[in-house]
Amino acid sequence: MDQVNSFQGRRIVLGVCGGIAAYKAIELCRQLVDAGAFVSVVMTESSKEFVGEATFSALSSEAVWSSLFAEQDPIPHTRLGQAADLIVVAPATARLISAYATGYSHDLLTNVLLATRAPVVICPAMHTEMWEHPAVQDNLKILSQRGVHVVDPEEGRLAGGDIGSGRLAGTERVLEAMRGVLSSSTPSGEVRGDEILEPSASGLHGLNVLVTAGGTREPIDPVRYIGNRSSGKQGHALAEEALARGAAVTLVTTTQIATSPAITCVSVDTAQEMHDAVMSRSATADGIVMAAAVADFAPSQIATEKLKKSDGAPMLEMHPTIDILAALGSCKPNGQTLVGFAAETQDVRENAERKLKDKQADILVVNDVAAPGVGFEFETNEVAILCAASEDRFVPLTDKRSVAAVVLDVVVSTRSAQEPVPSSGE
Ligand code: CTP
Image (cartoon, rainbow, N blue to C red; front, side, top):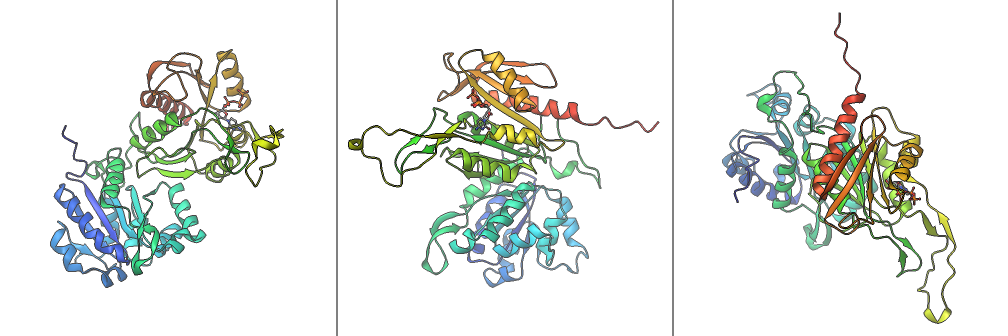
């Protein structure tokens, strides 16, 4: 089957920073040009220590830029930023990430990044110690909360022969992330002057969406935990669907399911870790979907050594976990849409209505997990979507991606119903 060429006719700015991985940007540039994209390369001064301007000039269809004060165009940063359908920075160094996060526009690339409304994909590459440094991680968190798509680096051999995480993501992963972002965004040809295009009725363009997925695991000892049967498939389907609709997506998940590179994944295990990961990102989220099955109780003591059978059945003392959805509902900022899930086996409707109200959610998606083919572990689901502000929806048994599509349709319609009606001015 022919794959749609997402790059044909698209205007891409390829930012290249000074790191050993700069040579890999050459292959990225070549593949984009081969796919029909108009590629403008913006090099930082230090990138020229690693690759030559002439290499990119020979490959790319457009001029190569590196100075804010280029003779051919006195203000290249605004022109490049306004015309771009997408900006990708590969490799992105710790310095570029820091400058972009703080708005420090000291060179052409940082100016272009600040002077654009186009989606941005950042592909960090650096030594493991730098990659893991809290300063770098905090800056990346700021950027992803602003809707920047981050393609995490990979494990492998680094400069100087060290092995660890920090190697630039492979070209195919970078291209896949760019395709994901482009498939949901508007071509630059439709932007005129300062006019801002409205998002499509089914779209989540420019919104930050936070999704949780999977069942939490509460440890008893180093090898055992209390878990539940949630597979995380519905949460992952929601994250992929939100990405396809143009959102910048953060997925807090307990599973190892592969996701699109443009989704920012945060791995957690316990209810407390999920709580911390969600609450630290919630303030800037336009929509939060709590699809995870969060444990209600956790063992109060975690044995440091494996409990031995010969010592007899352990008496576990448990304590209640924090209800993340209820915590989010109690401090929900204006304009945020909060979606909860409920898996029920009896009194489905009553329980769902109570949870919607008690947890102050806008939408509650409920399934009867006792029904065949529904919920945990299955590829399919059947749900009722209860809405605090509008009519309920019922989604008969179907695949989880289709369920995700209807849930996000309800999110979009809830948001547009909440938007203030502009006055006619009369
Ligand atoms: N939830 C949560 N934090 C918890 C427990 C649940 O955020 N500690 C969220 C789930 O992610 C889901 C919703 O609350 O979106 C409902 O979860 P559910 O387990 O069905 O409800 P509970 O409040 O735990 O009620 P019960 O166990 O009595 O059914």
